[in-house]
Amino acid sequence: MKLNNTESYITEIKQILAQARQKAYAAVNTAMVEAYWLIGKRIVEEEQQGKSRANYGESILKNLSIALTRDLGKGFSYANLRNFRQFYLTYPDPENCYTLCSKLSWSHNRLIMRVANKRAREYYIQESTSQNWSVRNLERNINTHYYERVLSVKSEYSLSPQNDNSEQNIGDYIKDPYIFEFLNLPINHKETETKIETALIQNLQLFLLELGKGFSFVARQFRISTETSHFYIDLVFYNYILKCFVIFDLKTTRLTHQDVGQLDMYVRMFDDLKRQVNDNPTIGILLCAEKDETIVKYSVLNESKQLFATKYMPYLPTEEELVQEIERKKAFIRLQLEDGGEL
Image 1 (cartoon, one colour):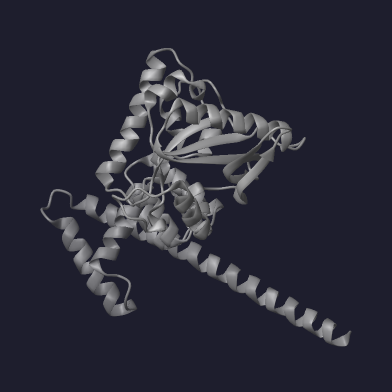
Image 2 (cartoon, rainbow, N blue to C red):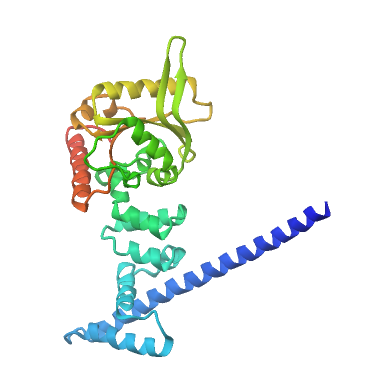
């Protein structure tokens, strides 16, 4: 018993030290991010004094780099000073720096400030902070246009402001397309549904990161039994933020109306047989190799708030390919609005 008390006492001290170190690191990080913003502000102010002189800004950075490196050591290269300057120009309001950017490391901020879309920058700051994204995860998410792939692109065409009702924001937790480059599957080779499903489970941690916030894995080939038949759902997750089950039906072919009907049946059965009293309605997602917007428009997908069809890409697409996919989605949304449809 005495040994257990000693172990508990040592563990508590370790926790105290760990928490103290974390607080110290956070304090230092906040101070440095704020300092870089102030340096950038001062550089811009100095540049404005000599704006009529050619190459004045460039000479300021070069001379400042030499002076700071000589007196303070590494970390003040010409490139870094340009980053400090850009940091201030990206967030000229000090409130943004002190309340948002200072919560992230300089490496996080350096990546985010290069994102052109202001709303996307705000999204990456918020998600990096709340979801504790590593620098590596943040870089991947930016490179794969994580923000643009989330179905919240609908809000860009919505005339009414979004509210915090989870039912109306379900689309914020779903992407189109999903990118599974971490599976390392051949680009031009058609894999079976079973093989892709197996690869996703074998890379579950990366799969969860791609799915986004709130997802936890429940089961693969989840069986639902009725009095006459057994049905098997490819992948089942639970989202603890939305407080509902999310079921995935994987298709390695182009979307068909039969696929939609099958998913609709699965969702109805799951709600009837597995959903708990406190759970919100189940969400169904068709992961397909190719989407057919005609089927999306004229099927139950267009009316249901619980059913979605999204494309998956088993490789890292080029920026041009991603932009094409995103623009295709936006164009479809515009047509829906012009036709008087609902988002």
